[in-house]
Amino acid sequence: MNYIVDPASCLQLALIRHGESQFNRDGTGGSDSPLTDLGIEQARRLGPWLAANLPMVALYSSTMRRATQTAEQIAPHLHLPIQFDSDLIEADFDMGQSLHQFSDPASAIGGQAFTLERMTPAYIDFQSRVVNAVRKIVCAHNIGTIAIVTHGGVIATLIRTIFGAHQVSVYSENTSVLLLRWMNQRWYLVYSNCIEHLRR
Image (cartoon, rainbow, N blue to C red; front, side, top):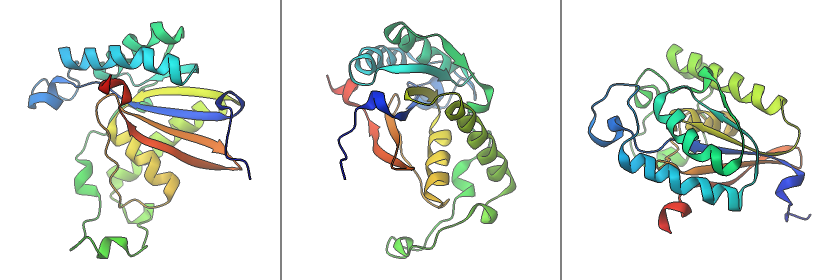
């Protein structure tokens, strides 16, 4: 089987976490805090990297300020309009309190998946919103790479849903990129937490 793929010939989702927000930095600014100067610089660096490495066919963004400001820094490099979707906003509850905890690391590798039915009502509602938002985006595009600027909880919940296990945390740095590719009739996790643009 050939795993060398021309990205332009398949459907890909580039899930991008927003730049550093004021709340990320010091816990101030509220739930919809803006980007810090560092967050803006992170987003500025991401735009040229995306243009060079992941040519996009569409750009979507959460409507929260830290996401919209990130998308606004990226958009000129992609030459794409930003399509805003409020269903891509972050959860309004403590995600960590909804995820199962294990007594030790060995027991967490037992292969026992926590299904959606075992999660809290707040998590179930959030997961449904995230899945519906991403399904809507996927159904609007047959091919090409789609950039989605959103939040750590949204990215992690989508990955947990695809993997069918809702007990795993997925870590994302600010402005990191997680790439999903639709190939061979399944989703491939190509890479996660890519911050190559911040190392240059």
